[in-house]
Image (cartoon, rainbow, N blue to C red; front, top):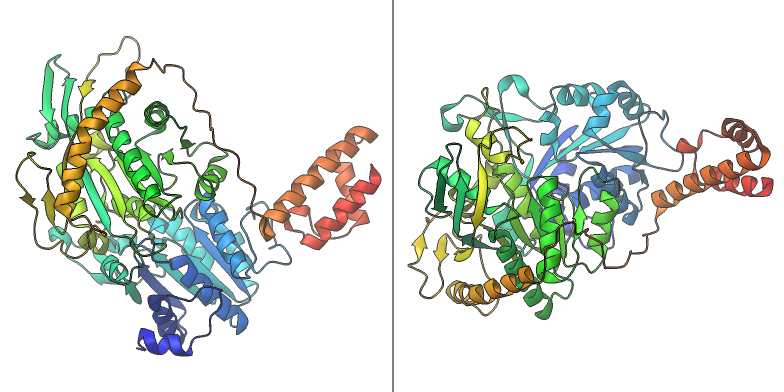
Length: 591
């Protein structure tokens, strides 16, 4: 295998930014054998997209493939892939639906989702075999999300010329639930029989941290006392960090995340204070993400952000048709905080986000690694990421073993549901009228607990002794700059009382019931590029057709037919830019 230095010396650059050493090394290994299948495991934030598109550009230039098909988990990632490809001179259509047959002329391929492939696998098979095609399976573990998704991927792309699979973490599965095109090795995880994926090239968080590719992460844990009423009508109180049994810990955690308590606003104030510090210390565009369990909580958290910080956050919900545009606007704009559920948990690139508030009850290793991955992408030296989280054992364990968990992130699917996990991950909503109240959050306060660094929990002065978590977590958590971990913990501890006063003052200013989150930051100008221009041309043609139909009292279908007769070519959905522009000019002459 060629070393990174040898590969860098001989590899031409296909984009304006020099490749990282690991990307060059991975390309070198690929080009040694030009395999049909190749799996790359690279830690979130390392640059998997750039690697994949560089490989695609090389294969297109050598005419080893004539088309590129990218399959990704979400609709927003389709646009992100298309934008990244455009920057490298590759035109990929992110708007090609299953209702359209041919790939649009003037493009080198398209971006789709696993769900779309599962909808019509034979359609995608036809597209991937009509010419030599490179299929890029982004976050390939998602091929196992649906019972039919893996089968559809196999049916669609078995005969493709090349396949490149990408993932942020290795994953496990059962022998009868293998994801297509992935190599596995036998693995006895926790005494269970199973298989673990094995990559052709691996680049872990520890290596990325040493290469300054990702930011070191500071985990700031906050405890507090939660009070709730159980199903027997008894009032129970427990500390987040000393909850005792798992059941009590679960209830204390759920109570802390309740928007009506004081834990959430206190931690949001601490998060906002950290963003201010970053903006004053060399990251003028620093931003934060608040991760909620569900959309109802997200809306309430957005109100709290507005009340505590005086600024409206970007509220990003999965059922909002403008969600993708909001993510893009947040990425390019100046808003301080975005509140979301799962929209930015995986793959979404927001490099200026350096702070994360973990206000969700999700606790799976995969979700934790992917969510933390949203704030670790380094843009320059001396940047760090901060994650604010409840001081509960499941999250502290994930934080303390982040590097290890990124190498063992997806356990085999359980045959029986984990009742405790389901109860935690799905907090109950308010009961309907007439139903018995089984659980009710009453109140929760928040207190700084400790900072996790190099496997050790550092508390503030007078807040208790330092707690050692273990030795296996060395070298992957860190705090760059002048402050030591103990000094940082002391600073957060001292700021704790100031933040409590600030939160109380914001709450006393008035009731925010009925408050609507209205963005008070301006709309960002749309970023012009190939596929966006095509989308705008299609919309403009539709508007012109509607105007002509209204003017001439003809059905819109008749106008469309006349247009295609005047300017021959495929339907607008798969027409080239030149055809679309010619049709637009023809429609303008008809007005």
